[in-house]
Image (tube, rainbow, N blue to C red; front, side):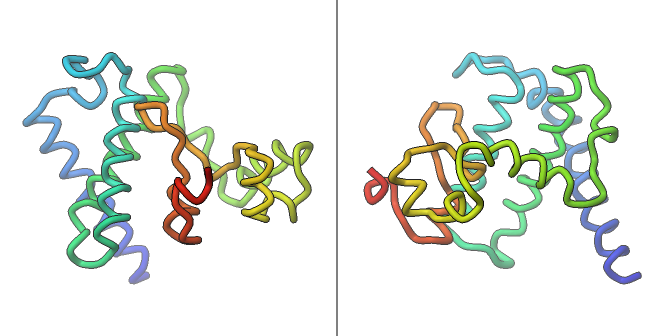
Length: 159
């Protein structure tokens, strides 16, 4: 049960952080003012998450990055809330307790590539097909953080 206790402790800490920040800043994450941008909550939260991921990419992961990881954990929770509100859904109904959600996402792309082609990074670069690893930042630039961080390629090398 130690792992379960640790999960509860970390999730409680994130919950308490979110409640404190909500008391301090109001609903600014879910109802952005739009002073410096005109994005909705999902776009705004995506930009904040992008900043946190870039910080982790630059500084690495360790005890020095705990605060950033808690912030990212909180932004993920807020993103779920933003999606619930925008699409008027209960996110709990969309939780899979197995890997079926991953299988569905992978199968969505199966008509474009075989499994081996999808996992062949140089081949995907040649084809310039978006993958599950691609995402868009609020600035609209294509990012592929996973490949850049794990595989070691840069934007320049991909172009």
